[in-house]
Length: 227
Image (cartoon, rainbow, N blue to C red):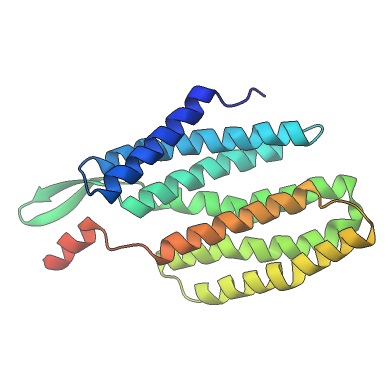
């Protein structure tokens, strides 16, 4: 796998910084720049992730890693669109109508795929070479899988999403992490790739949870509430 190009990396940093400057200065064009930056981030970071995996781990990236990188791209795109609510709008009389917006299933698919496909697949691949960590990884996988589902519940106002989020965190932080670290110390070995991937995924979803909880009211919602 080729490393992400320097040009792509510089472009990603440039447009991200430009968006921050425009947004902070309340200058026009910030939303357009952010959609460019978001797409570049969705391309660059998964490629960088796969490149680092290849450098640090033998016989990788595997298909499961590439699938995880694809899901990461989708998740970044959905977060960027959800955060800004980029919808083309039109007017029918005095009524505001959406001309184009991302369908709701696009927001749902990557999160469900992480919970029901990627995490079990990753644990199974690890099981083939390390059977001792299976039970511990299953516990961590269950805890982590509940968090993306709770995020969907938060975004779509489903009941019990707070309970799922709390249970997922309790299982992952208070049960999985101590067990996994204890197992590694007992066998005197480094924490493996599966553990590192689960930790990265956990941090990503906690970050997304913070974004969802802090979402401002969009301009479309403001206009609709005036009617």
